[in-house]
Length: 427
Image (tube, rainbow, N blue to C red):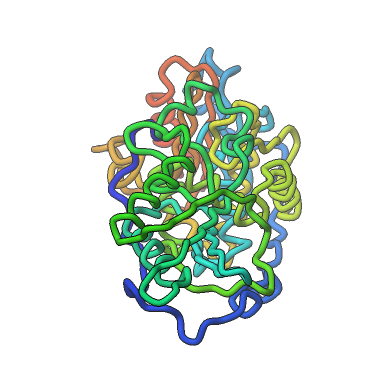
């Protein structure tokens, strides 16, 4: 899990500075109902991985590799057909740390598709009041706010040359919804534990978490509108609604980077804010309890081994998450057969090359041949992903809760898995 401030923000696609959509469209014409999205691909019906490992030689090597620390390890290795090659405590539920993101990103990609973008929108209500709504674009920044401010000043009504009062509402979640309940207070102060809100400038973090992001947004918007000449501006907060009403008119919207970039932020860079937003977007609700339940239902529909699995959040920072290595390996196999498999696999870090795996396994046979997701919180180290071998991909999940030198053990496991001679039948 990345604990440093986020890298340079992705470039966003924005419309012209002062152009309004022409013609203005009613809310019901702009909303995208779920029924209009491409249908979710049907479950592939892959096996749940059989109960007995089918490669005794690899099994013996992995048991020897973890040695006396076997009780704190879960390791599962499968091939592309879902055949279980080796398994150590694969059905033991453990804290997954950021390996949880493999679940939330798979769910989001399946439900929303590769062309999905988050929207931040400025609306006009029947009484002339303006409302700013959003869905948690992680790259939302001041350039977009400057455009919204200019449009709000130009759309707020005027009387001759004397501008009238501009009333702008910010639609946002209440404070209790800003963090999953299981996030520690210490984590909430760090950039990686920033609050999850719909209107989040720079993902609600700079060098640390912004503790009151809505107050900050109000202040910055007020200052920006004053800088642009606004003399009478009133900014207030309202509760976010599931969807716009029919009598609201859309004036302007800013789109996030596409799903490909959102997935990469979550998996390659291990960005917690983005993975939480993806969970909420995929489930169609910002009620985390409902979102978790819907994601669990989706996992069950995929025919995956669910014994002991419990989803608490989208990022893995919540210590109530419980995942098995058997589930993660089976999920990787299932997503490899998915119509959006290429998008999913392209979102992962690469050993020795990119993301959170960039500095690992350099100079070994693993470098450049393993795509995966890392996970780290206190006492937890996990890595799950796809290892390329001469006999095809191997889907590997490794979770340790309390190992002494987990990175060394993980490297040794991957090298053993890459030795395909261990699983070939004798000639």
